[in-house]
Image (cartoon, rainbow, N blue to C red; front, top):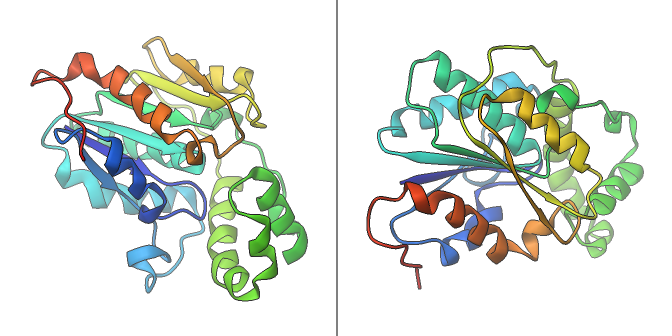
Length: 238
């Protein structure tokens, strides 16, 4: 079984490398990233969510030959949704489960006008979300490196236009945090995107609860996938 990880805005494959320590050997972790970061640093940034989804779909479409699940955090949740739509349209096997983390349903996405902020205000917003440490604000080199990536991702997110299509038949599991600005009510709107009943898990923490509670998150993922694993019981990597 494979688990595809779609990263958050500004994230890359390395952002979720720690998951490997807690996942069973029978579950293959597939860490994805968009152009312009990580191993794809030399590729041009993408500023459009649909184009980003096209890129990720092209990357994974030939790796769907065994049961798989998809996990997306924040912007990665929107990209996951768009890629699943492409998988269905191509008559490929859909994921057995879609895990949406810290994200409202696509129909609820709003423009926070972050693109209008100057550099200092933009980074204050990033710090408030909880994705980076305050000390990074003092490092001009870090800011210069990551700000174009973050702005590209936020532009893709904030310019996305929702279009209603047939509901997915994929079970959706929603993860959220009790101190996140993404509310339970907004997360409940994922029910509008699937014919299956959604399930919700709430963790302690802010938008990036995954940094402190990754073990609990992995436990929840394995709990959801365990009934679908027809092999031996999960054996955790050491």
